[in-house]
Length: 143
Image 1: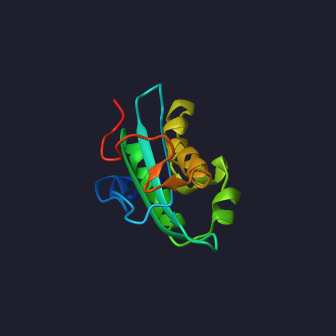
Image 2: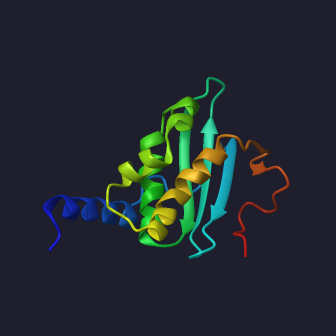
């Protein structure tokens, strides 16, 4: 039988999965990255608006995948909306697992860490005219 703490984590995860924070597109996107977990096919894209002072003015995600990867994306976006690039750089994989809260098997940890990896890469991935350098049509998902 799950403990009260585990039930709270599960409820929090379902809330983020069913009503995600900032899922969609960033209107003034300056940085963007996307990646997937080849083991399960989860896909996450992060779009950021970083101002000249290094503040994340807007943080959005989109993607497809399991409840863990999508809820973790929402939690991460909510945490870093309005924060600084330096705060993102200091946030470790262990910090991400603690933010998620629930105990996960090693394979499920990869689902949880996918959005963390994407956000870490996005702060180093400026876009040009609303698209990452060399990217195709931003309205199309990769096949």
